[in-house]
Length: 353
Image 1 (cartoon, rainbow, N blue to C red):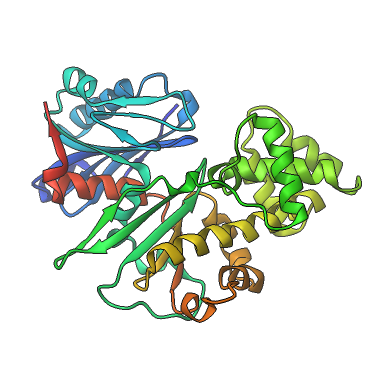
Image 2 (cartoon, helix red, strand yellow):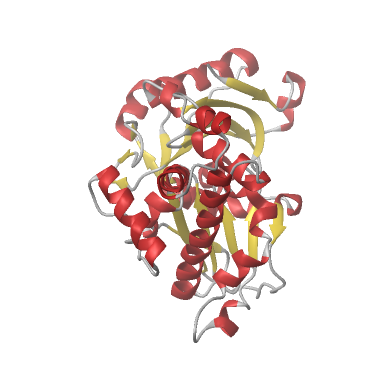
C-alpha cells in the first residue's frame, strides 16, 4: 500500500532537535513525511490517492511509524492539498478526498497544523530545490529580488506567485488554472467542442493542460486522424487502472505512436500558452518555474524550439517575454518540502487546536 523511504537511521536521529509532519495530498498521488531541522527528510510514505480512504487515518499511520521506529512524538505539521483552502478545510478539486483540520486535531495528537493549497506548497518549497533538480529552458537571467512565478501540470493545472517582502519571497495562492480555455484556430475550436461533449461543462485550462488534458487530446487525435496509430499502444492506454497520461507522454515524446505524438505536441503548445498568460499577468523576472508531475517526464521535449516560440508568440510583448527565465523543476518532493518549510519557518500560518 505505502511506498516507504527511510532517509536516516535511528542513530542519526539525535542530530536533530525538532520534527514536523508534512503532507502533500494530490489528485493522483499523495506523499506524507516527517522532516527534521532545516527541512531534512527522516522518512516518507507515498501512496496513490485513490487508495486513501481517509487522509486522517493515513496521517495517524505516519505518526505511529515515527513513534515505533524512531521514538518520535510529532505535535505539529503542515498539510498541502490540491484544492482551495476554505476556512479550516480543503476539498480536493479532482478527488473525493478532503482534509478537515479539526478532525486532524481531534484524532492525531497534533496541536498545530498548517493547511495550504498544493501549489502554495510548491512556492514554499522552491528555495529547497537543489540546482541539479532545475533544468534551464532559455537563456534569460533572473533578476535578484524580482517576483517569481510557478506553474505545473499534473492531475490539474496549478499556479502561483512569489513576491519579495523585503526579507524573503512569500507565495501567493492562485486558482488561475481554472481560467477559461480560449480557442485560437479551427483545431482548437474542434477540440474544445469535442471535450465539452465529454464533460458537459465549460473547458478551462485545468482540463486541457493536465494529465486529463493529455487523455482528451489523445482521444481527439484518435477521433480526428486517419487510423494510423499503433494498435497495441492504443490498447494499452485504453486499459482500466493505468496512468494514461504517463503512457501518452512516454509514447508521444519517443515518437512511438502518431496519436500520442499529436497529443503531446498539442499539449506542449498549450502549456506554453498557459505559461505565457501567467508571465504576462505577473512579470516574473526572478524566474518562471515549471513544476508538476508531467514536465519532468518531457524536459527534452520542452527544450525544443516550438515550446519557446509559442511562449514568446505575442505581437507586442515578445521582447519582454524573452527576458523571463524559464526552469523545469525536476524535484518531485517540492510540495512536501514546502509543507515542511511552513511548519518550521512560517509558524504564523499554523492553525491551533
